[in-house]
Length: 364
Length: 265
Image (cartoon, rainbow over all chains, first blue to last red; front, top):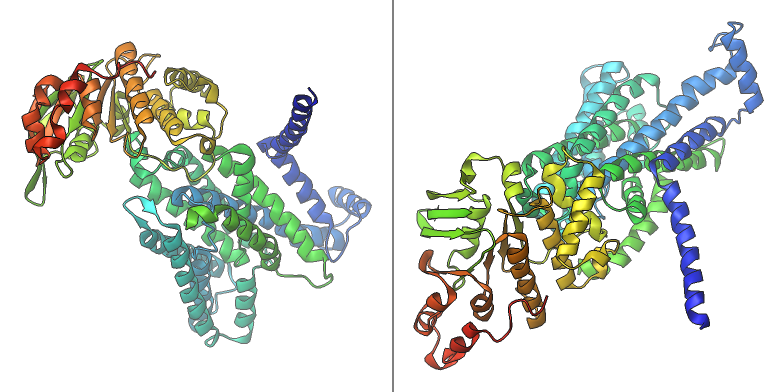
């Protein structure tokens, strides 16, 4: 009679692990993880800020003994590191939430905004914005310039979402093969156009463009954040509002319609929300692939695919993962830094291959 | 009661459905039979409120379906299609709770869950609550979806005067699964007061389980009434273009009933 007992024991271990994962992946757990990694992230980098130094500086600033500009620690923390930490959270959260929603819409876990060409579309339009705006006027570095580029990135991702969706979906059913092939086509077109535009660009713009294609969170200012944060928040709110409809769409568009939901409206709203989030993220940080693929998948594994929780949790976990990846990017070859897109691809590409292996039977 | 009166549907100047009338009483199982291309699915979609009709009218419980928003119709009738494939792994209870979508603004999660559990019990799947959908067999998955559709039409734990519309649910099922499903539907009719409209290809099943049969060909209703009257040997041979010898004798037996309608449940 030893076998049944053993079976129960191994089963128990399994449950302990599941419970731990469950707590970590709950919204409370993720919020705590996010706050912790934001805090750590502030003090790690090419220039290590000892916490005690920061504390004395903060006290001095609080009592008016020193201004922010005159204290190097505070200046660096508030104008360089804090915006970057906030940006990581916003971009990671925005991309992961957009990924969760577009995977629900396409009914496919392989739909990553970067893989199906949305990021590429956004990038092409943003690069066009940089190159052509500077040909005519010198406003690119100004506030209006960022708004313009962000808006163009939104239009670019919207157009490519519509194109890919139109190509891949027929009678409410999305073909995975067509979706990925359409993504390849859009990415190729975007790459070609971007390449073409580099020949019209000046040296400075070329650096900007390269930086974009690899993805980076460096060099962000509070002005840029002021544009990006509201956009991402609006996008996530739209996606959350349509979360129940996304749940129904898991059954297929026809079923969702039979259950009394206005599918057309939900579809366009979700496409708009995803394009808004992706456009905003690409405009500031370039192509950061795979975050939107890995994060929703992890949440689904532990918490299931209901979209309200999925989108919120993905936004939190996306923030955590990008913060960790960025910490790594900043420290591993300090004082230089790696483009963060390289790190997310290093983690994400093997993950994608694993997902392909798992789904191989269904894809044939 | 669902009442379809002289329903006509036109696609590019051709009538796909012509002047079809029938009713579904609460607790009745009505099947639509007929060869491919007879307009069966189109007719079902019209009754479901999914497709516009160009002639006649459809009323559910005395209200014309065209005057009601889709969210309201969703509470009166549920539609079950053939095999559904879920893109992500989901728990049985989560799938069934999706059925409460039309009531999401009025009730809490806990209330939805109770109703979902009740419906799972009604289809005999109560112990499957926490299983993942992909670990179930095709027949079991279908019953979960049936529970979801029941959840959708349950108001205060009652499904009286509510209707289920099923489009060829027995396609690609073996004979045991077919009889199980039909027994279950019959049970829901008799015990829960649900009215069922079902498209069937299997004439034996239709003969044994239906209260009323609607025989369609080229969009017209050739016959409508009790199985014994509709499924005459002569008419079957004519409608389905069958040679005399295939169907000789078969229907005399089945109509009397080889299998008791509730024996599989």
